[in-house]
Length: 138
Image (tube, rainbow, N blue to C red; front, top):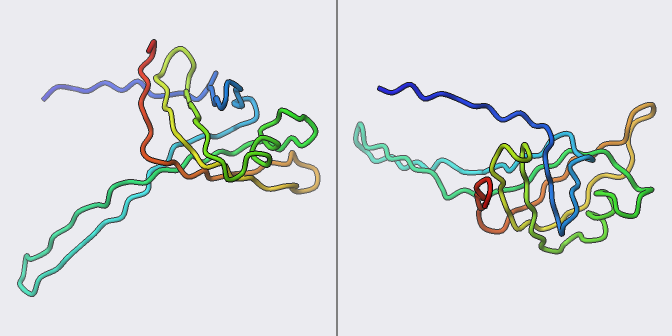
């Protein structure tokens, strides 16, 4: 058996591009997250157990710093485009890793936060279809 080496992704110099704007500076966490369910059926005899998984659905989960003062901020973009479908490209490490392109439905995030801390928010954007892997240099 061949030993498979790992080259872990380190999230730095990331890109989160929507409509030619890069919002990665506002983010501290970005993930494209699949959701699948296990389906099980059992018959009336011992060993008659069958399992499978459903096709995945995806969402983009973004944790970000709120910025309502800047007209071009991610907070404002989400607010102004809520309900619209937009193409988003996520690159974990620019120039090193491939990118993933997704069509997401924009949702707005939280407004405000705790005293004495940066106001942050988390938003979950549903993906239409599946992520498309874009190889480095494509």
